[in-house]
Length: 142
Image 1 (tube, rainbow, N blue to C red):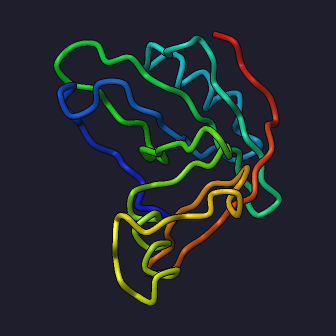
Image 2 (image 1 turned 30 degrees about the vertical axis):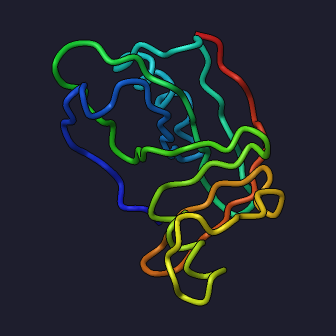
């Protein structure tokens, strides 16, 4: 899947961003505690998604940046969301999807039929595209 981020990023690179932290199913509570300890969560909610395509939970949350640098937790990626279809995706996955649908050509104006990716996460795995169908497992109020 996407290369997992474990780095320091300056706040001017982030601002308000949506993160997705992958958690083993038997480690969910530890992952939620770590997220809550490390970040100030915007909107006071962490959405925990499950997928029959994965043995992990996907914890999604917006963070508020404090200080000069923000630590990115292991197994965490930056994602974007298409609200109308509840689709999460990385920029790499979006570019790969466009090329797949457009005969190998990356054209950022190429129209995506987002309903085809409703309630899913689109990721890359090497050069391949991976779509995980998702459902809300639970919403954690902070």
